[in-house]
Length: 298
Image 1 (spheres, helix red, strand yellow):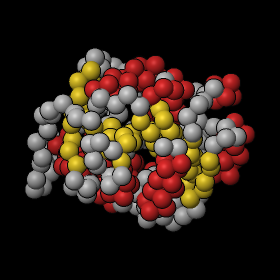
Image 2 (cartoon, rainbow, N blue to C red):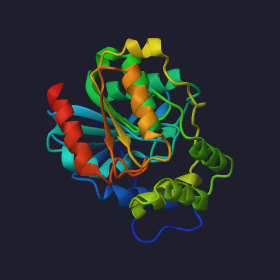
Image 3 (tube, rainbow, N blue to C red):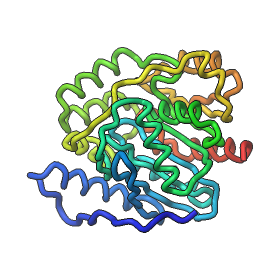
Image 4 (cartoon, rainbow, N blue to C red):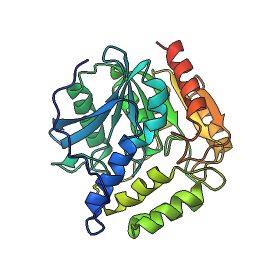
């Protein structure tokens, strides 16, 4: 699977310019990219705009698409990519309209637009079918895509997904809403530190998440959870990993809701992990479960 030539954004070295929020964001972004295994960042054009995809792993390996949560950027997958890139072709996509290296030409106004955009990105990558993993709101997108395009998704993995099976905790939702009204680096840091109480936070990623508040974003309206009837139509084998210390989801309640709505799914609770830390802090356990699941569904 060969990707088209890319025009990489210039890497920024030295100290960030404190007067330029976007330059500060780029500095933090590339600092996180330096922690990936041997990887390249490609830029694909579609009718919605330019999308950045970080690619690692053998070109002829099974493709594994990674979809990040709101504001996290694709760089949050660095630890999992380091463990899985030997066996899979990793395609970590920056969601268009969110903080990242992409640039939107058309606003993404709905969930349908998001699905059309993702189809265009996969087509641009030359991927007809892939395993898809999503974290947080990226889990919602991965699930919706598996429902809308079942022939494109060979396996589905959801990491502490949001708005898929149960409602998020009220305490987190209120803090998230406050951040959306007044988005500042300090508020972004405070949200993650509060949610990750008792769990180590990657400080480099946290600074990138905070810097993303200075980047213009055009996120679509919040989408509703899939109905029970829609979930019954899901054909992709599904693995759900919940963060035991998440302050976004109630792990016990979400596990029961997922098993009730998707009785054929594999559901695991990663005990010492928060919502925001799940893609990197327990990466060894997450990678082992994901790799075993993909091996069984290959």
